Length: 108
Image (cartoon, rainbow, N blue to C red; front, side, top):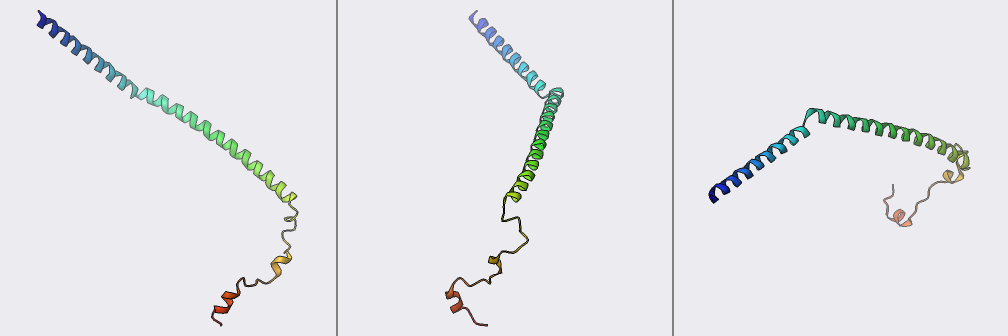
């Protein structure tokens, strides 16, 4: 009698294990199903478009702000107002920085 009960428990445990594995396989198949994947891709695509639109909006704002800042920078900077005129510093010839280099350089 004890042997029959033990066999019955082992068989029932085996049936439960098989049922659990079948249920787990169904969930895996559902997770890899075509409908769910398409829905997931659509959501990603929507999010991607929203992110691109937001990035474009910020780029436009940054571009307009940089143009305004450049205008303000050039109008407020008095040194750049006559940028076509050369300053006297640039008209002087350059002098050598080190007499050591002149002393040991080969003469032409």
